[in-house]
Image (cartoon, rainbow, N blue to C red; front, side, top):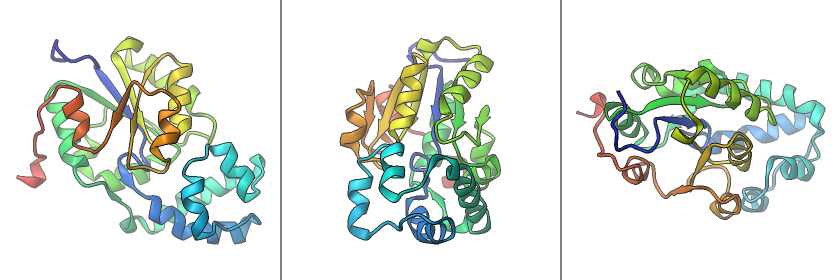
Length: 223
């Protein structure tokens, strides 16, 4: 049962860049995808600039048309599945998830990545903490997935917080009337996320339970 002093009953997490430290993997395979699908590689000096862009601006910069996005995304997920050991959770994520659940919060994951990749990186103990998964969202399809997730949860919108690292996460939450919490450690620069007026900004993984008025608890694996 949710503790009465908690503002949010359900937290909906993005995966890549929020729970999983996959940015270096993304950059490492980007040139392979660019060569295969005929769009521009990302030059090293462009990375910080691109981290301030939204998805449409990035597509324009590298010259990838919208119709190619599903194939590229599918191949990215397949490459990650083959090289899943290269992707790990951010430090402290396991403790954070266990802290939230132990104190009455329900958890969900909403991501463009595959459910199998998500669960592989989370590991069995953490994956079991997630009550709802909405995976495989199209690049611009998070809003419909979010609407379905919220409807299935049975929880009022004002009791839900979306947490993510991309402007499309913020835009989907805003469109559905749900609060958004921006993380400072993901794919998108914090200044670009702050321009979306998030209700909360988290400076570290451990800051999530702290800002939500909860105690930090070690996961069973860390004890």
